[in-house]
Structures are given as C-alpha cells and as structure tokens.
Length: 118
Image (cartoon, rainbow, N blue to C red; front, side, top):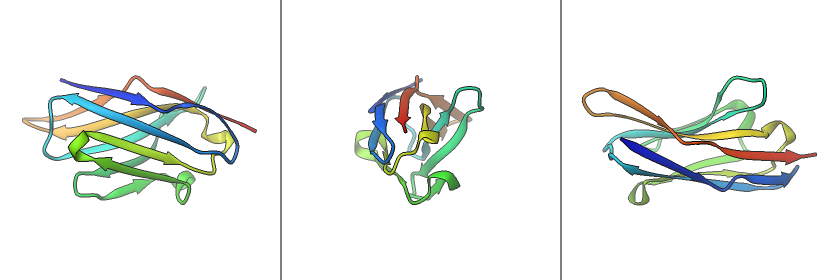
C-alpha cells in the first residue's frame, strides 16, 4: 500500500502563486509516474501534469507556461508550482502515483482545495 499526503492548497487572488507538495510513503516503486489532477465543481477530474521517473513531463494545455511539476525521488515527493493563477484553476487538486510491481497500481491523495479569487 501507498499513502499520499498533500499540502499547499489555499486561497489566492488571481495572478498569485501556490506550491503543492505530495509525499508518498509505504510501498516504493523503482519506476513510477507521479502527477496532479484536479476537479472543479460539477466537472470531471482532469489531468494537470505528470512526470515519470525518467523525467518525462506532460502538461495540460491550459496550464502550460504557468505550472511546473517536479519530483524529488530521494524524498518521494512531487511538487506543483502554480504561477499566474486564474479563477478557472479553482478546484480540488489530487496527487497521483502509478507504478508497476506484479501489476500496475494506482494511488490517489485525499485532495487539497485550491481557490483562486478574481
């Protein structure tokens, strides 16, 4: 089992910045994908950004140039630096971890609220 603990959400004005962190504990995968997804009220959960163990990064078009994902494998932590925040970035942000042992496993954090006021 894996536990994901997120931190860093909050309320910020449009144009501001926040940094999310997510630390994993428990089972450790030598190769894994870490990432962030978000869900706005009344909408489906959507990808924000992912990063593989090898450093390959993928961003949603809506956050390119504003958000930066990074990971510290020694700390089992993934970060999401969010700059130039917009009201449409508001939602619950979920940390994600996917990795394979005998089979592919996926884990989610409990979610952290990000609210951007206009």
